[in-house]
Every structure is written in C-alpha cells, then in structure tokens.
Length: 136
Image (cartoon, rainbow, N blue to C red; front, side, top):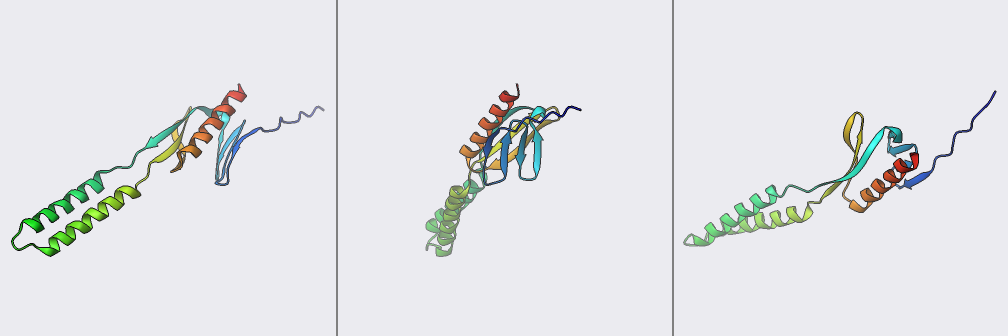
C-alpha cells in the first residue's frame, strides 16, 4: 500500500482581511476558488458616478443666482443654494474609486474581491498570477 504525501501548499499572499492565495486555492473570507479553474485574473477599476454631485451643485448655483438677482435679494434662496453647493462638494470628495479582483474561469467572469485600496487588489492580482504560473 503506497501513500503519497500531498505536496505542501505554497502561500503567495495572506492578509488580515481574510484573503489567502496559495498555489492551489484562492480563499476570500468564506469562498474558495480552485486555481485549476481560474484561467485569468485582472484588476478592474470602477470610477464613481459624478452625476449626483454635479446636478446638486448646478441646482445650488441656480438658487444662488436667483437669490441675488431678485430685488430685494431673497436670502433663503442664497442660503439654500450655498448649502446645496457645499453638499455637492462634500459628496464629490467623499466618493471613492472601487477596485475589483476580476477572475475568469470556465463558468464566466466574476468579481472575487472589491476594495477601495487599489494597491491591495494589485498585490492580490500579482499573487494569483504567480500561483497560476507556479501550477504550470
């Protein structure tokens, strides 16, 4: 009776957020992907939609202009317009780009991980690529 010992897994990446990349598996919190089934991996960038802040800022600008062109000046319109403009600026600043780890397999493409930290996603992409290469 011959027993063959399984080759030890080589770990390429591990972080404190539940992601681990080995030569045989990609583990993302409670989901495990087999490296044998992953055909390619890439980083996808999703820029935030700026339409909401732009429209809010334009509406605020209209209120400010109307408030100053009325005789006498309509103070509530100016104040409301300035509040909308400040809200639009804060909304714009608060929006962040989302980075996705996009994996392709025989069953299609899916986003395995999404994060605001692009460098983290890039490290995971490199680790998965190294794991795919190491499998041969």
